[in-house]
Length: 349
Image 1 (cartoon, rainbow, N blue to C red):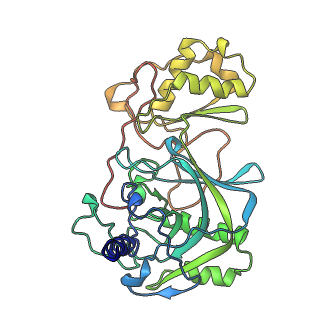
Image 2 (cartoon, rainbow, N blue to C red):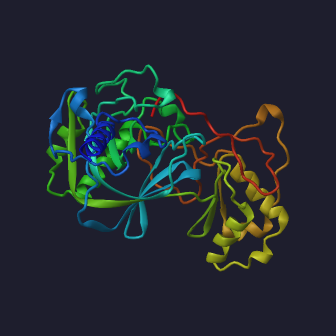
């Protein structure tokens, strides 16, 4: 009996040790530490990798009402919602198809400034990688916000890939944008942290700093290839090649606007599909019944139909007339698909 108990204790200790020093975004490795949540110490400054990445406890505290962070994977955007309206939107990179960002609901409360990065154990893509201290080469960038044990919103050194699915499961932002988002969330959920302290936390440095906001903010990750916004329909590519019926998704959104979907001809649906497959597009509802497919373009002109290029490195207001196009795509698409090429994840989280 004692021997079995001792063996179980050693197994639990061995498993718990995996939760120390993890900072890579790897959705597959997440299950290795599921449920093991050692507590973080709010406000502590750390300068060594051994102590830098203790997995924080999932906060159980009051949730801010009427505020939500929303990421729609096909759109390549992160949106901050307040009182039912989008107040800020940012270009992001979600996980590649191989390391898909998990759809679901999360709570944001723990923020790590100038984070260390430690390679997640057992991940082939991180083999032979060494821990990176805070600094310009750190794959976590300037800030990381915990969504779950091994899934974060964080900065990146690959800002040129924002808008395309390219990570190992995390949500990447430009460093300027992730700092801006972290400050905004602190002002909402931790009003006791004054502006001078926020500026100190956001300043580049060699020491990792942890803060836990007084309240939690809801976060939702969705997968929608069509989205109704006011009097416009936005369509996006099926970046993960999921079993999504594009026409059904479009008609569902148009029905929400009170449109008779029987009045959407097949030619109009083909034009919507083209826009989605080319990287994303936005259409006025009044124009949809009259849309016709665009003629094929010469090879030299092929590429994404950009209807608004994401601003990299600075937060951008949600455009009323267009959506950014996160990825290129050939105009030709399967009959009931809006697929787009999926970027393979690089050596960042």
